[in-house]
Amino acid sequence: MKEEMNSRILRTLPREKAFYFFTSIGNYTGQSAASLKEFMEKVNTVNVKSLEFHLSRGDFEKWTTEVLEDKKLALDFWRLQRSNLLGDGLRSQLYLTVSRRYKELVAKPSVPV
Amino acid sequence: MKLKNNAVSLDATDIEILRELQKDSRETYGAIGKRLGIAHSTVYDRVRRMEQQRVIKSYTATVDVEKIGIKNITAIMTVYTDPKETEKVAEKLAALPEALEVYTSLSEELLIIAKVTAASQEDLHELIANSVAPFPGVLRIRTSIVTKKFKETEFQVLGDKKS
Image (cartoon, rainbow over all chains, first blue to last red; front, side, top):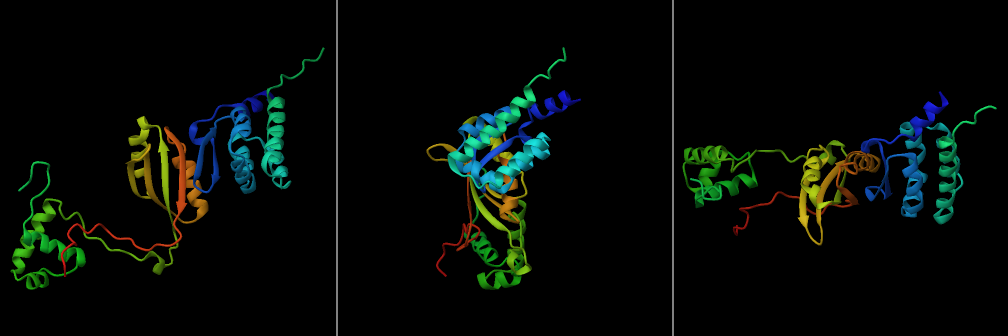
């Protein structure tokens, strides 16, 4: 059951459900992420203004809840939104948050001896 | 009569009639005829012919949307695309009801310029993020929101006569 849920969160999405990175209203960077793994990678490379823009609007939280269906990560984004972090500090914290969650999801459940 | 490149040949009277209709499309044939010194039946015949030839495409009302309380925002969007996909992206963009005008342009790179409208900045963002950015071949998008309109008019093909 849990594995099924994890696979769902980790799935590759169709392009219309992907996350599209903007730096401001209507200004698309050309970077998008169609899975949590790709999202994690893009957090490290996309213009930091885009991270600030989307986090302040609650877009990461919304996408994670409505599309990825990962309430745990959505809550982490919500907390991060309230931290008022900017620039590279924000990028590092975002990457840490997403990569930690990604590792949790891909980790195989331990088999009891 | 049609010319070689499908352009329709018009004489000076046709052009005068079109000029009058571009000023006011509700003008009566009688009033136009009187002004031009020709019979109203001549005006009627020529207008009918130009309608059939699609020289006159339509008669429309220009609505002042602000007067009726609609405060839509307008934005000019530049869409940079993979050159192989430009036509398809432009066609898809043109199919959106929010797209008022769509053009392709060859500057340093092939791109699409579009005038779009939305009820709010948030709706504009939703439109671009959910409907335009996902089109295959879209590389990036730059958008400028219009803050003040100084002029907006249809191209007056025949409006160069000194009055």
